[in-house]
Amino acid sequence: LKTDPNNSWGQAQSAVIATSGNFPDALAGVPLAAYRRGPLLLTDPNAGLYGPANDEINRIVPKGHTIYILGGAAVVPPTVDAQLVKEGYKVQRFAGKDRFDTALQIAKVGMGDPKTVVVATGRLFPDALSAGPLAAGPRAPEAAGQDPRPAAIILTDGSSFYDAASAASVKSQLGTADCHAVTAVGVSAVQAA
Image (cartoon, rainbow, N blue to C red; front, side, top):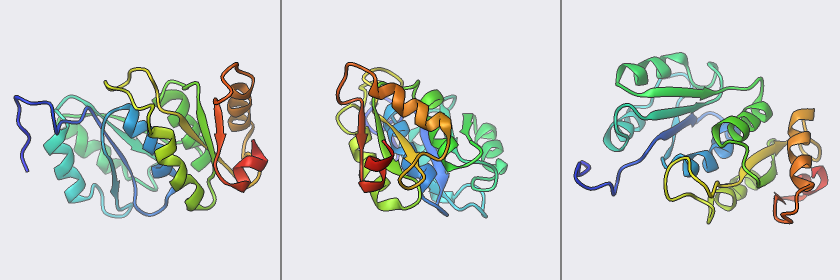
């Protein structure tokens, strides 16, 4: 399929790439994709950029725009960054020391620390999978990187936060006047929040 250069329908402002080998980075990236107005695409951690994902990026994302990569070199190899730069894109990677830190980087840097967060366990995928549409949902912006911002997804380590930074980020939202600032999805997240 080709896009019509005279029509912005079918055009994305960015794309988000995560590994197909595991779920946490992709799930935390759902609201980032909504906020940055682009698809979330998966690639094999051992094979570079998946051909159909690269084709889709080149079909719908204008050259010069930013492609966001989630996770470290072990899950999305640096050859993906190099390939995208060579093809004319800017690349920004969010790679924390673990899945919890990556989710926090996505929230704080990629999404500009939104006022609302959705908390879900980063150990099992069903709760976080359910949280993705809730986080991105009606808060998705009309233009990339604009308000209203989708809620960020912050991952827990089961029934507690894995690190102090994630706990502090969520607890800072609990102290706001917006009673909908934190939504916990699943029993483990409710216990952590």
